[in-house]
Each structure stands twice: as C-alpha cells, then as structure tokens.
Amino acid sequence: MTNFFQKLILPIFILTLTFTFISCGDSVNVEDDGKQTPVSADFDISGTGEVLHDDSPKPVTITAKPDKSDGAITIYYEGIAPTSYTKNTTPPSETGSYSVTFDVAETEVWNEAIGLHAGNLAILTEPTPAASDYTIGNLNQQENSVTAVTITPKTGKSPGTVSNIRYDGSTTIPQTPGTYPVTFDVAAAPPGWKGATGLSAGNLTVTPLPTPVAADYTIGNLNQTPGSVTAVTITPKADKSPGARTIRYNGSTTIPQAIGTYPVTFDVAAATGWKAATGLYAGILTVDYKIGNTGPGGGIIFYVSPSGFTMTDTNEICHYLEAAPADQGSAAWAALAFKETLIGCPETAIGTGRKNTTLILAADSNAPAALACKNYSGGGKTDWFLPSYDELDELYKNQDLVGNFSAVYYWSSSEANSDYAWCQRFSDGSQASYAKNSILSVRAVRAF
Image: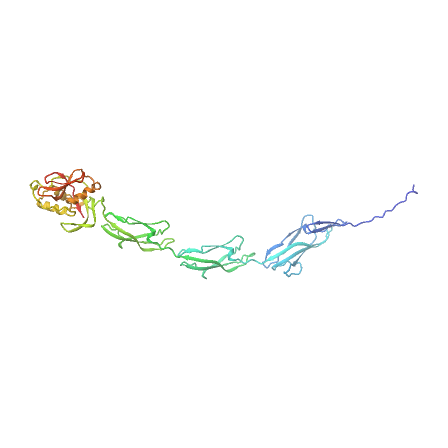
C-alpha cells in the first residue's frame, strides 16, 4: 500500500488576522496574540468641562475601569484657539479652553494607546456681581423711622458679604425727607465670584410723616348741660393718628361747667408714622339747658330763650324757666280778706311772673298760691314764684317733659281784675279767669 500513498507534507501558514471593532469612536484592536488596545471608554475621567479660575492648576483625573488596562497614563493639555498653550503634561491654571488627551502604556495583556481623547477643559473667569443679581427692598420709607435698605442675592448669585451701603455717599441712614442714591459693595466669594464696588441699588425715597388734621377725628359731646359737663370726645378715624390728644376749652384744659360757648381746640402727640399737631379746631362746646333737662334748682326746664328775656322786677336777662317737679298743692289765689281787692299785677308776658308774685305778697302777705311758691326751696333756691299767664302756657305745652300734672286748672300770677285771676286747664290748655278764692292747683317756677 505504501506504493500507492505518498506522505504529503502540507505547509502550515501562520496567518496574522486583525479584527477591528468600532465602539464610541475608538477602535479596539485584538491581535493574534490576544492583546487589546485601550480606548477612552475604558477610563473614568473627571475634571473636564467648565471650572472657575482661581490661579490654581486644574488637573484632569483619569482612572481605568475594572478589567481595563492598568498601563501608566500620561495626560496632555493643549490650548484650543484662541488659547495659546503648547501641548504638555502640566495642568493649566489660566483662563482659556484646553483639549485633554492621554496615552496608556503597554502591559502584558494590553497594547499601548496613544492620543486618546479625554474631553475639553474650560477655565472660566470668575463673574463679577451686578446690581441686577440682587433683590432690593425698603426703598420707600417715612422720615424718623428709616431702616437700612435690604440687599439680598438672588438664587445662584454671589454669596459675598454685602457691605458699605451708602446713601448719597454716606453710610449713615438718613431720617429726613428726600431722595438718596443708594450704592453698595460686595465682597469676593472665591472660588466663583469676584468682588464688586459701587453697585447701584436705586434711590431711597424718604417721605415726610403725615400731620394730623381736624378732619381725621370724630368729635362728640359738643352740646352739654351745665354742671355735668364731661370732656369733648375726639376719636381718630380709621388709619389716622392714634397720638394722645390734649383738649382745650377757650384755651384752658379745665372742663367748663357754666352756661356758655367755648371754642374747643386740641393737640395730638407724635405717634408711630405720624407727626404731632397743635391747635386743631374741634368746634364749639355749647353748655346749655334744653327743655326736659334738670335745672340748677332741681326742677325741669320747660322754656328756653337763646336770645334771653327780661325779668321785669330787676331787668335781669334770663334764658330759662324751670318748674318744680311736683305741685305745691292746691290753694286760693288770695286770702279771704283780699278776694275782691285789686292787687295791680296784670302783666302776662314771660318774665313778669316773679314781679307779679312780689306784688301779690306785698299787698297780701298770706296769699296762699303765691306764698306756696315763695316758700318752695327746691335745689336750695329761694327765687321760686307763681308763673305768669304766658309762663303758665309754656308750662302746659311741655307738661309731659316736666311731669306730675293733673288734668285740672292751675293758677297764674296774672290778675284779671279785682275779683278774678287767670288760670289754665292742663287737660286741654284752655285759659280762663276764676274767682280769687277758688281752690286750684299750684306749680312753682323759677327763672335763670
């Protein structure tokens, strides 16, 4: 069989095959010896991107990922136009843009890699704060209570200390009305921010405090009764000055009790947000009696004459008539001995009753009706009298305010003739003359 076969020697060709895998822009070369070539993606890279300039070098860190080449790494930095920086291994420290590449040395299982791209490094100039980086407050205030303008950095802006706030060049906070340009400085806050000086915050406007006026207040108690006068009330309206008030009555702080009219003025003390004010006019305090008030004799006022009326016995000017609060009983107008005697007191007008009463008692000292009035001493007063015809009519008109009347006839002090005197029925107001010895009701009055 050996004759038919020949031993064939086949040449063995050792072929070197190269396979190229494309991944993330880098080639991984696998050669017949099983070695791989490192690529950028095999490494963790930090320190590229944007960083702020602070005069210190900005090194990039490159570390192999697990199961990747542990060959020595050499990092290179090269300026990107217009930054001028010759490629070298020294990390840059000046502002500019830099391309970062690296080499990886060969190891037993990894090939050498040259010029792998790590990224770009940009060293940026630290920004300088601007006025628009801040929120400005308290630019509108009132005199005498001005506080510092507030200057607060917005989010992401310099945290540097704000200082040297100046108002028209002075660090003293102004308190007087006016407009003051406001500037401020910001301290450097490295790394990241430069300092800044003379930034404009706008204008501080200091407005004058308002001054109270009389119209700011509600005035009360301007009409009162003599002897019981209390202070005029002066109450600030909403949002007006609450400052303490000092009230004067015709220039005096003493509250008047006598009948009269008194100009009322008042001062207002300074208060928060308000100036003081003096001499504000509140109006006229009128101390006066009104019909239905209690008079100084303890009686009830039933007649008021602002212009006054003349008492015919003394020519005194009076303005009021008050009546005793109850009857002085029932009595004859004249004693029996004088029931047909002409006394001579025919006057009927307001202001004549007191003179009539005096004339009656001068002629007939025991005249019952007149004497009952003369002897009445209500309120410690001794000038009570029997009312005249017209005075009695005013008493009738206001009997409901005075009170305690009966629906009967009441005597007046006005004489009709030698036998009769005038009277009035309080049920309907009718006036008539009755015999002087008639028993009728009596109510004393007095004038003042």
